[in-house]
Length: 66
Image (cartoon, rainbow, N blue to C red; front, side, top):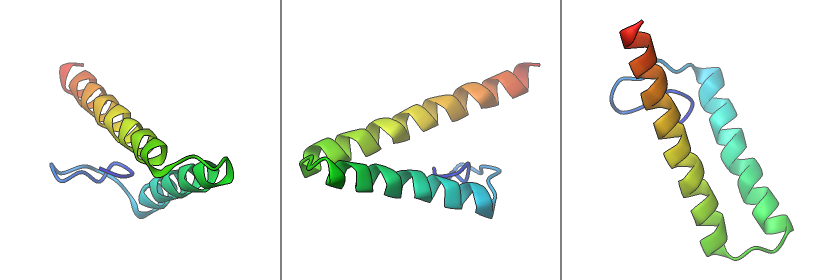
């Protein structure tokens, strides 16, 4: 799931995918800039991915119920 394009049939656009990729790249650059080790980098990326999945799930439920 990146930019709304999930394997379960998201409704993402090319622009939103680019924005998602830019967010991942910015996170990577920031962790490199502060000399964080790779485990911190992967933890942050994983946390962002889980948060995006939760947000997507909640938004989908809200759209279906009302």
